[in-house]
Amino acid sequence: MRDVLPWREPVPLDGTMGEPRARGRFGEYGGQYAPESLVEACREVDEAFREAWADPGFRGALARLLAVHAGRPTPLTPARRLSEALGVQLYLKREDLTHTGSHKINNVLGQALLATRMGRRRLIAETGAGQHGVATATAAALLGLEATVFMGERDIERQALNVFRMRMLGAEVVPVTTGSRTLKDATSEAMRHWVGATGDSHYCIGSVVGPDPYPWMVREFQRIIGDEARGQFAAELRTGVPDYVVACVGGGSNAAGTFAGFADTPARLVGVEAEGGAGAARGRLGVLHGCRSLFLQDDDGQITQAHSIAPGLDYPGVGPEHAHLRDLGRARYVTVTDDEAVGAAVRLARTEGIVPALESAHALAWVIHAAGSGDLPAGSTVMMTLSGRGDKDVSTLKELL
Ligand SMILES: *Cc1c(COP(=O)(O)O)cnc(C)c1O
Image (cartoon, rainbow, N blue to C red; front, side):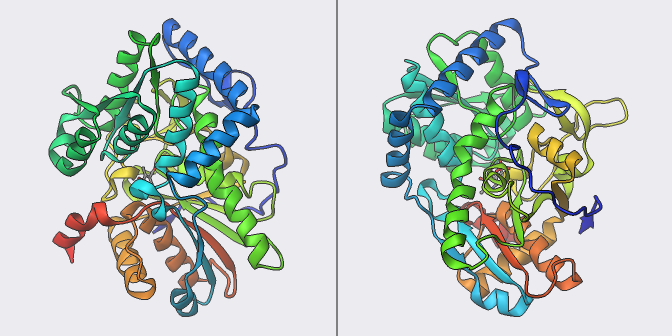
């Protein structure tokens, strides 16, 4: 467990986690580092998204999809036995209970609905472990779109079940054989493919990364997590706001959506990264996949491969808005090892009857550690986003336990 950055007093940020500045800037991060043809395609997505997001008709249609198809609102569950053991009051925002089992569906339904509004007939997506690919294939089937999912050859071998699920849902899965044959290469390949298909296809990015407008559009589609939780807290607690708001960070979409609901309050925001994928905690300034942000790099500035037991945290960078929140001191980013995450997953299973995704278990591992070390004062109220369920991880866990 490494806590890389000093804790500063949280400043409520009015107006942050709103729109980025011109050309998608969050402080010195973000932007649109893309070839000319993609800049034009991104401009079209930006224009369509702004229009749609201001249109009550679009908002209503998305809210209905999220309710009747994805199972929203998700509950806010008090973790009673674990809270008692830790000496804090822990509440879990249950994204694991959504259709397909993680928060990814929130973003994908938003982008799929936007694609139909733009007259596109196909979704293009990248996927690492296959979770975003499965969510994209699901949304495409629901709305009558085609789906083409790029996936590294190595990931295809490691994630056979999700490859089958995508094909079962009618998606085409395209193996990527370049580079390390994992997520980073699949993303590059998906973007390259989009260049030649912008007329009829929408590129559905799975996290708060990529060129403008994706980082803030994906955050807006995920802010339902934070907004719902804020309302549920107001109903449950007299103060209405938890002391701490915690979420795991891969690219950073479930954390950004969670933080967005609390950025203008005194709640302390904590993003938990994998020790081997700590873009926010240990990355350096760089450009990847159309965006300036913090990335893990070697001494020559080459972006390196991330490593985590949780496939969704296996990304060498972090979304630009997190880099900015880190610089501002508004959010704090900490890291957790594979072993700590596995331990936390087992503990949640045995105290609350919930098997979490290994990604989400990282957030919990920090809560457990911080409650023990006094970093979380006794009696604190903690709201943690449980980003997904652990069914996908049982074979990994089975080998370890
Ligand atoms: C993909 C995934 C993550 C990481 O992605 P973010 O964009 O950082 O949210 C976390 N948890 C689960 C369950 C995931 O599937």
